[in-house]
Image (cartoon, rainbow, N blue to C red):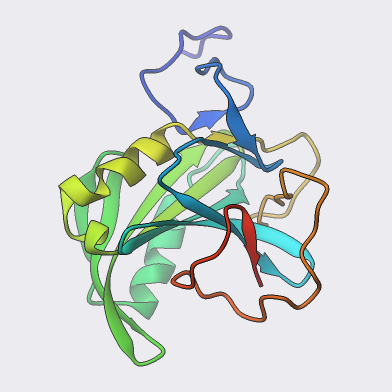
Length: 197
């Protein structure tokens, strides 16, 4: 039985329309991120569209992407199946947000630890992927998990296709030079809220 004014949950990720802690966050439009001075937060872009966030901390990284989802069903089972088709060596386990995938993946000839967390929200799905040491070490992962727990997803009311990325924007009016970052490389350091293209 659903209640219209549910009490605030213990932790997020939060939907923008549900009760959540009211403190200053980095407003990227589709995502509002908690402030952590130790994190280097960068926007990931395809063409002119910002579609995700890469958070760098020590020797690990966290990638976040919010997707539009149907109102009545979970996307994580479907997304999980697609990930396992590409990386069959990953194993399912229980994590802070339910079932997750972890193990080693190989991309561009390099093998690295990865941990996939999927969170289904109301009409949105948040995929969080941790790479590096934090993918295999719970203590090292703790700051990333705390970060994800305090993310606010702003789905908006406009119609969107299933699995369409919820568009992000820079927190200021400044924009990077076109073509400044030609490829997505989450391990290249950059200024806070820089762009990755």
